[in-house]
Length: 136
Image (cartoon, rainbow, N blue to C red; front, top):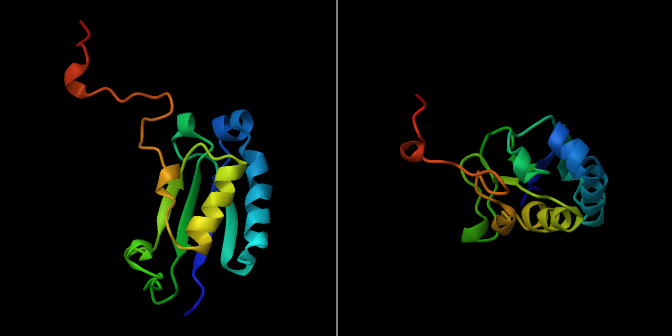
């Protein structure tokens, strides 16, 4: 079975990078990738902002599809990539969560759903339109 390839994209926006320490995550991800022997199939990149600042640092992991556009199969039903491969935006990433992401998502091909918060979590609250007061 051909190796699956991934891109790990770390947010470096002003909230994540400057205030929440995402700058140090690059070295943590690189070490985890090296330790698992997947450096040849995993890229690490930076993004200025994912728009989920209250939930940061945020990290996007995306499977890179082969030139034919068809994802390779995982080891079972729970790890099968979708039509575009496995992709997840992980939130509140620290050193221990970074290692889990590499182990689970990159090495085992399983999205670590327990590390994903729904939009609006982490201090930002969505208000339904019907409950908003009209301004005079």
